[in-house]
Length: 180
Image (cartoon, rainbow, N blue to C red; front, side, top):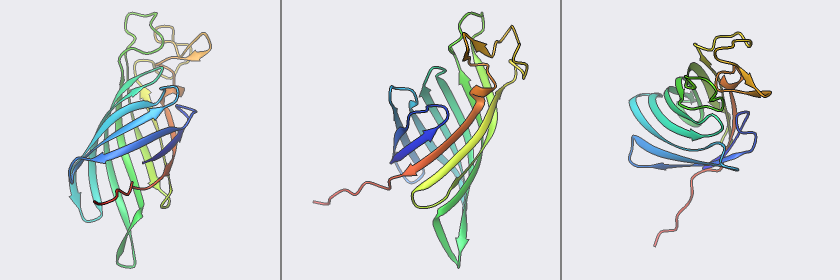
């Protein structure tokens, strides 16, 4: 459980994770007013020593709502022959599909973005993630008339700026249930 402060949502998002079994968990996010709200599922694909690979599939509600498919590679560091559970870093590759973005004035409003991300848990309470995901058909030209990057001074699903992701996490720790 924790909070996420991100450039995408501006307003903090609260999130919860629940383990279904040893290798699978689901997550819920609640943004106010709904921007950043979503659900996702993680599945550990491979685990060896201090490394593990995870597939994440999620859906986000936002002005440019998206389906996300992310392949993560996590690595925990060692400290004096003991694993430090809070010193974890990760990299990832993400595909974002925005089926119907803000800008609907064209025949093909779908945006498909690909990109890389990097993240790190800094301590018991704090972590961050940053990345960039680009839509190839929109290109880098902000004056692209086929897939405009702005509409009425707001970024569209094709904007280069829509692809930037920066998040700061505040971990609140696991909930402690009373045993009966």
